[in-house]
Image 1 (cartoon, one colour):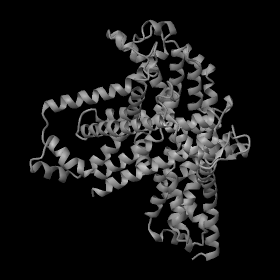
Image 2: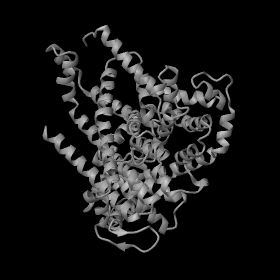
Image 3: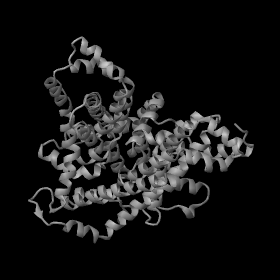
Length: 276
Length: 290
């Protein structure tokens, strides 16, 4: 590769540096602010706190019901994720390893979901949940989270399973194993890399989801983290440092998760965006 | 081989649960939306059939057209803001620079955190009294520039666009970077042997090589722009005086705040139609050049 002039490197680092600062400063500013008292913050918003005020955190944790939100988010995220991946893997198995009359049509139907903006379904889903008396329950979120992520899950898993050689199942058939046995003990184990991708994708999408929660959940005790924290900030407008502490509490787990699983997460989200 | 009947049953049983949930919660609502859009309905009392009147009313509502205009602004923000910025960053990171990994990690953070967090963080930046932006302006002596970033109709849409760029630019950076790294080194070497270097090489060789990826990101960016909701709902709720309303917010406000379910459904059908039309056109234009 040809050597670039020093001027190029100065420009590159300058540009990247500004970009990095642009990304970090808002978050850094928020974390620093969360350790200040309200007076300290109002007097000098950029100074480092004199004493680290953990009181903002204990207060935010209590006032904002953070434990309830975290619990709800974890529960809804994981149940939806498990249901989506199990059902999606099973559907992908039949769509990729069998020939039957409606196969193409069904596959196309499932892919259609990636084109639908969820906003176009919001009012009917609200009415359906209302009529089924499911409004304001965990299930009212689990069902849409599952339904809308089945498309991408099936798309990724079907593509992966299709690439296996045809004779893979034959040993199982020889042993007299049933179709579900073959799925469970032959196909599913070798699909693991693709399963990991869809698990991460489903996790991050469900964990971050806001619109369905906003429309379908109203009880304080059922709110998920994004909904709960958005409401908290909307109500607690008087104390910016308290808001910052609550936001930091919500932010830290996802940042840690990201740093730990960076490669898989980035690859998964890129695949999700490019294919979706 | 399995007996045919048994296989058929297994396929049926295996696909049924996914199909029920998927069709019931994702497909059926589209059809219901279409149906609801023909009625005057508050979601509680009896529906009154009014044909296409909802659509007529929508097209005569200035606020709807304002929201369409804002959707176009968001779309252009994606196309002229996020994509070129992402491409430039990817081009810079495609060389072996020290700290490459750091910039990639940092660049992707806004993509991973929820749009709610992004919105709340930017709400803090734009806060009139104690916000980051106004404080910075105060410190560097530009008090005159301080303003109510989200409340001032001249600035609110611009402020939202900036936050929107922040939110997604890292995603495009990573997508482009992956595409750039797929260009074989032979192509690069051949280009350099022919004397194509620097900007010339980028425009003549690199960009055409990743055309397919650019097309994908353009379509993704367009369809994404029609789905913007969280950011605006949390930052401004569509205000001040509808100045930042986009179609999704217009739909939400009409349906869930004003209880006009029929009217809201008609809007949601239009969102679906508009986004499909623009995506199809972008697809056509992109393919034609091949």
